[in-house]
Length: 353
Figure 1 (tube, one colour):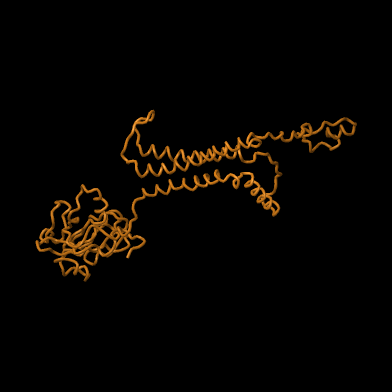
Figure 2: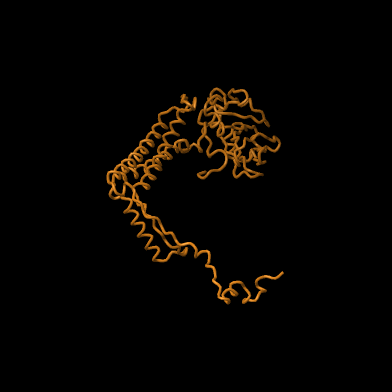
């Protein structure tokens, strides 16, 4: 099978027609002429200043309504109760807070967009401008032209002339971000020093987690493992989970001669030592104790602590020893805390000290 490349050039149809004086059909693109751009039609605002003023008032009204809607959003967020339910047809029974926040913020954003669109369609220049294609890399001439076009656009937008409309637009764009700032309140209060403090303080009794009774030294046998909480912390408290996550205590009794760490011995009572139950790796509760070696094991990632040697880490990913609580006995013979933990409980954080 032959292709046109195999045919001599003089035998091609176009060459043969030219050789015989035949009229050659014009190229397809030559059959159509450039129709050009249609004549520009002026808008009523371009020729009637009263119409332009009406459009300006509409845009100003929309921007002002956006400002008021944003203020309404903030007011609703502060004043409407979270648990209030209202009936709104046809939506039915819905949260009053969600409805008020959604409607006010939606109206605020809609009015900004509608005002900008109406401004562009009725007051900004709408003359068509043809521009030739140019390389991606802008030349100095193009950059100068862009800046000139930008200056011309600013002039055509009548921002300097129509001050009331400009000011309301600036006000709407300035106020509407406040809706997002107000929402930051839901992130909760600043943590302050709450990561360093627990419910333990001087004089708090050690209460058995199982019996809910204060502990005496005689209640803790050698080799046993007892879990305790601070006196006054009850499960029905609204912040119980938050507090127990830091204050959970692990109590063991070791023969005083087996305690290797001097501070541990000084902070104990007759061999009874109290350590945080919260693992210093990722905060899992420690629940396994080997009485022969005095090792406490975290069941999550097998971090192992030597409770006879300052609860130092002897195995696993935990980064530091368990915090110890200094304890003593009050006048009634109950075990009590002599203060809070000397260091933060649980995993390390950025201000650990």
